[in-house]
Length: 197
Image (cartoon, rainbow, N blue to C red; front, side):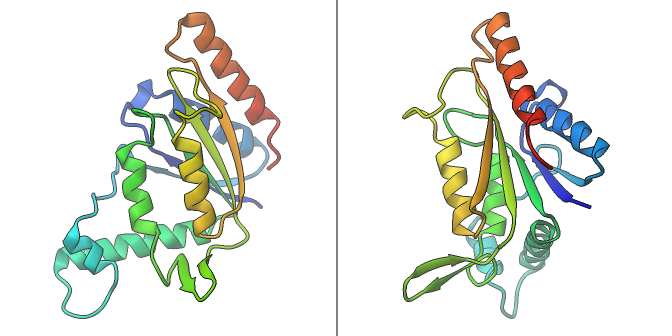
């Protein structure tokens, strides 16, 4: 049975188009027998990294309660990735990049010696054998353009921790009128329908 982790990152709750699309994927894959875990980073945000927490994530002795709590959460998030075969990342474009909610999650899972290591020949990702699917929504049209900082960044980050099997589902032009929005969502759902589990 395939084990799937869905990460929602929108701050828009029930109005979120990216969440609606990963909910659609959830429905499709549940019917196929996937075991799915959902983590909503919008409703249950990961703390923003600061100097105290960054020090705490390195471990060690004499950590404050706040640092110990952050380290425990980081370990939980990393374990969650390792326990699943596929990671679905809902990544709406906010001001040309990812939401803060998603960046905070990244800061808690990108840990030297835990999800990547530095070697004499460069960094090596330590998360192996995983597949990632980015579901990205945008008000305009940015795919493959200079204004798309979402997909290149996430692809780089995922590769950095060892996840190189990355696919992307785009829903674009969602604020460019009802017809364009309907077409963008329909195209994304068709692409989801074509995904293999």
